[in-house]
Length: 299
Length: 311
Image (spheres, rainbow over the protein chains, first blue to last red):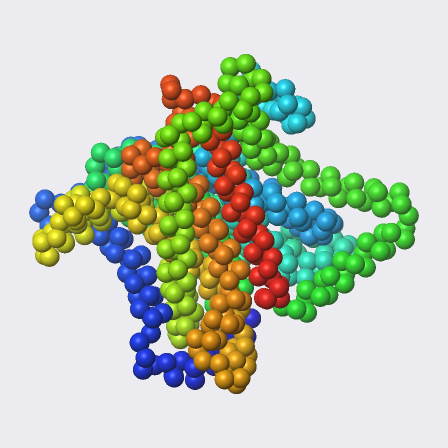
């Protein structure tokens, strides 16, 4: 893949030389684009740091000494970790299984991973509330009796962190399924699996020691995107009434603009760390043709 | 890329044949266990993905109190001016930001694609994926700090150029202010989606066109743009869906000052007094219909993309 990119590069050069003396519209738009992305960040950084007399780190000190800051950050970290683990444990073996045993189920998987686009977080919150808080004969039958079990008297999961974790897994489903599926298609899954079976490896052993190491970049990318989605998710946790970090951010920010700016910068650096980790793992793919574009839905 | 793909398909076709030969009963058992392996995931999707959607659709046709079948919810939706306005606002906000994102993002992506240094391209793509993920509440606050009443750029313009944005009629807390904030995540998303599509343009095509006497403009009009069009439309649909379902940015920025469908639904979920579940569900079904249109067009266009990119 890198080879192909290199060839393209050299073939493009004379073309680029011919255009050197003309005004480059694409460069102009590129500079405008970068400025548009950088200016709000720079302005926010300065705004957060500006106090009554010059630069001070007062707002950062206040934030770090705030008990709610650590509390909500911990809650969000726990939720995000739980969602990441659940998403990876549930989806990776399933995608591998479909690839190996059930290629005819692929359209179904594609459909299921597209549904979250048509049913965004806000609708999921509405629907989950209705499914688990009111009894509905249709739903009870369609869910094979599982919904009454989950929303019964002993075990009521409506508005609980557990349900929130499940919802996060659904919200990040497109971003988990795609990179894992792409990596599984890129390696020769079936040949690898058959080679392993013929050498006496069982299903789980093949999966854990042969397949998983080979698709690790995709899995890590999926995990980090789930993690960053769950960390920044506002809609579901606010409608479920669970006090997570983004809710804290909103509450503090509505009262104190300088603190809000500092918190926004902190969350930016958090996103930065997650994306950098993805890029480091998936690394060389970025410049090649197979750029995996996965965008978390934290809107 | 081609070679492993072709061996894979041939391996796929040999195995089911071998099973076919070994008798019907075995094949049935094999298929059954295959589907059994999918069961945990399917059950999870049923419980937390499909049932919520189903309940919304069912609830939109049910009376809020008695539960009997009715289209009253949709009638009330169509009669309520504020709901119609909410849909108009949401659709135009999504359309405007998707258009701005698609047009400017395309040119920026072309700039990224044309940047000669590899490190620069990687840096720009990396930065775009960070910016595309930087949304919701923090993004709203970043824009308040930049263009709010006491925001950095607002004050800077006032002190240095003596331009008062808010006297000139600009406000961050209106439709166009929200457009500015949404474009912040739409632009980099478009760049991320378009750079791979641009890389799929084969240099041979341009060479062939040039050999046949085509100018740069002709090449773009007759070859590059028609090839890119499905990718661009697919990307635009994704941008549209992205903006249409967005809630946190608008909520944190305007606190309900802008009437959007997502904000109306949030009222319904939170159990606002003058809201009932039937109406909330009807609004949600309206959203699903609009989003389904976008997603259908998106997948249809992606299918056409694969014809050109040989995937």
